[in-house]
Image 1 (tube, rainbow, N blue to C red):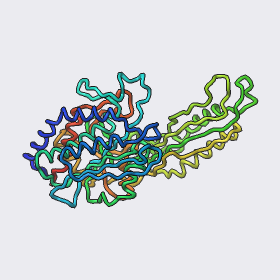
Image 2 (cartoon, one colour):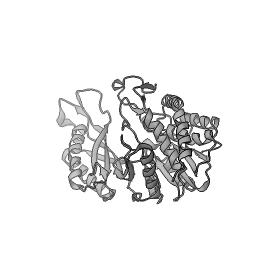
Image 3 (cartoon, one colour):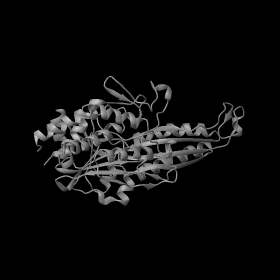
Amino acid sequence: MVNSDILKQITARIDSYRDEMIKMQMDLIAIPALGPESGGDGENEKAAFIVEYLKNNGFNDIREFNAPDERVSPGVRPNVIAKVPGKRRKVTVWLLTHMDIVPPGELNLWHGDPYRGYVKDGKIYGRGAEDNQQDLVASLFAARSFIDEGITPESSIGLGFVSDEETGSAKGLGYLIENHGDLFKKSDIIVVPDFGNDEGSAIEVAEKSILWLRFRTAGKQCHASRPALGRNAFAAASHLVVALKKLSTVFDDTNPIYYPPESTFEPTKKEANIPNINTIPGDDVFYLDCRVLPSYNLNDIVATIRSTADDIAKRFDVAIEITPIQRIQAPPPTPSDAPVVGALQEAIRDIYGVDASAVGIGGGTVAAYFRKKGIPVAVWSRLCEMAHQPNEYCRIDNMIRNAQIFAYLCLRK
């Protein structure tokens, strides 16, 4: 139950932030926060910007937890926690977003500079605008509304701004859970706003297992006019890509709670081999992205892939090395009747007039780290599903009204 008068006061305050929220989005878009795997130097500049903003806007409880990482020039990956005390100190409503982004990809597909945001037709364009800055900004202004109105929320508010979500979270929430796990309790209401649909009707409670693999095929380089003198690593790797398609027929279970309902096995990144046309490559590297239903053990997936690769290696007289890049066996799902799910359903119904239901997804989120510890968590946002796409954008109204959803959660008695 929520006090309707206080809710009106808080939602009106959030409405008044519109221009400030847009400006913050523009400022964040201009600070690329790429992990070292993506050729970047981490999230430190963006974290410093957020911390400074929090300090200047009435947040008094701000802590930084830095994960060591020698691959970035500061030597650490930052994780920022800010809290606003509530009437019930034993329950915290956590809103956990990530600071890092993915690279823009092919620049010729963008209508402008991906790191120079702009507003058009009620949308904010720029890399990171939706993933995850829409709800990073929304969560911050939801908490700020209580400070500015002088209202104590029913539950304490916890804001988490973490690193490394796009490349595995080992330096982000994974680091926090491992080294500062006492931050989070099973009694807390934890929301990760990093998945959703255009209606806001999907609350993610389950994820597929994730398996990212690197395949390096080693053959023998030679002149393309004398192929018998070499062993074509690219040709062997290409046959392996095709052979791996059979995985979907071997591991063919379906579960309608997930979208898509089946496991997927997709070749993705391809590294350059030789720079010229008239040489047969002796070395080739590609990657496979597997999203696997939890009913399967990843050990069985890996064993089948290894057997398939061995067959190709023998056929083409090459060596195939398989290296795991990310491997996460999906933990048990959040129960669909968990308090966080019910709280979100109530808030979504009252703010958006939409009935939301629990679903499973193929993408991985940081929620998996909570579920491994037996902590209920829900992943929800209303968004346009523009993550990782050229000309990424977020709808301004989604950013504002999602902030009102988050504030609603903090007002529930």
